[in-house]
Image 1 (cartoon, rainbow, N blue to C red):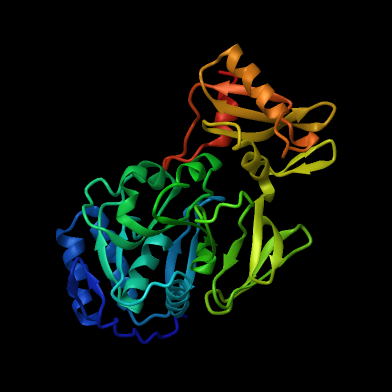
Image 2 (cartoon, rainbow, N blue to C red; image 1 turned 180 degrees about the vertical axis):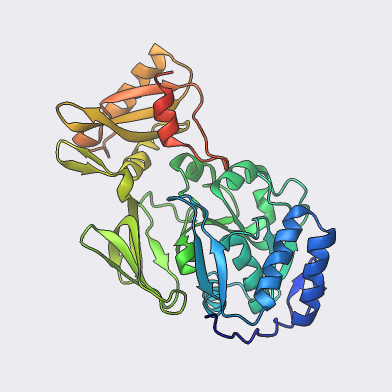
Length: 365
């Protein structure tokens, strides 16, 4: 049974595309988006109609970035709590100008709309394309993107003051590219079950110390680990149940943690558990193109660590990579890849992430 929800009036400073709407206005706006608007506006209309219904729960589709997509029920009051926490954490007061460039059929897009309604932001919408800033000619206080969108928007990112990046880990290669930007770029950590992000970390801090930066949790979030070393999230304001993840972490304080990688990516080589994501961060110091490390079956070790680099085949490049990796002081002996594969073009997912599994398969083609 769906409990009743008293839909709160929107903040008096809330605007969509420069126009203020009340809750009753939004019903008409939603129908207009669905009937007359572009497909992405239709998705916004669908969400607004769901939001103004007096039911407590919303059905939300997960993105499937860490498993098969599935439908979840989340509470609207949790979405409001999440919006308040984001406003506080990123210091985004009422009348902040924000850009929505994510589709409203997933939690990240829905939450940008809820934040604007609750916090009194001025929200503009553009089509959720791979290069969302292409036709943007004004500056915004805040925006959320996927890593793929960020990679395609670097030349125009000065238009955004604060950017959060989610929906997949930011590769070391992309992290390098944002270091000298004026935009404050944050990687977020979260999932649909926790109503978007529960932690964030700055990717391009002003005082560069070359030390890894941990994720810092948002207000009212409790963290711990289970017997596997995976993150457990207790966040009663945004999730009804305790959320057990498959993300291996190292907790630094009750507010901070380092993300080591997905437990499903761990390479067990000769009894030593290796986290590809950690090793990739180290290799990033010396490899200036797209790459990843993974495990392949090995008779002696069970699995051996190998490196895939996106490049045309060249004996010279292979020798150079081997030499550079050998001289990399931050790598432990067992973190040195046993073999390097040069692949002309990595396989990709529909939203531009490296498809590791398919790329590994393609090496034999």
